[in-house]
Image (cartoon, rainbow, N blue to C red; front, side):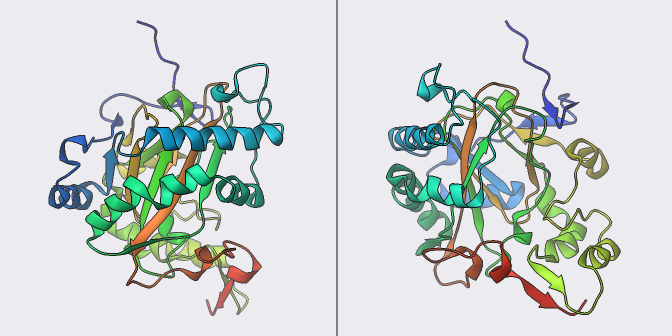
Length: 310
């Protein structure tokens, strides 16, 4: 049996001993029992649902995205397109991200119809609306592409707090490719919720005090003001005494987690692009964050800024 590569985050080796690193709990055994799924979500802060989504639809979405990335000269065409071998470092801009989702009918079918929407309607128990903005993630190899630990509430907390993130891999994603990790039991960290969890990346101070200064007074874990909770996922795990949980994802898998669930990713140690999307869902009856809805959501930018007295 071949040994796996040493997993890393920003080039630092990850401790994969059982006390520090573990496997996501699969809910494949309870996929049709929504009372059980709600109880597991409450207990764990996430649901991992292997192969819940339609593989053919997602395969078509992946191919369309790879074609678009090839047009942007990110794909090494000396290899089959479907392998997604990177030609160079891939930094997808916000505008390109929107294009990757809007010009991909199969992706929109996978995200906003079919098994995804059926799951949320049963899980939430009523009519559902997704946020309109789709985050298309394209991660090339290297030590600079790992995502730092954060919670989603700081990016989209102006509507209901009962908002749910769906992360899906667009292609088989062994852990060497740096798939998403969840910090075990992080949704229960009440001090984090009461400090970092109250922040908004688009807020600025109108009375002279720098926002970073206010945040540093409020919460010693607060990062740079970009929404990052910590820049060192390995040290954070040790400080909070949790385990990072992940798995070898396959096409069709769905990972659902809460706004207060801490998550991050590892380095992509392969020569292939790691493709994924993350989208958000809520009950239609609850308030929605205006930054992420409409034909052309304002997202993060000048229109999203909100001044407060600090």
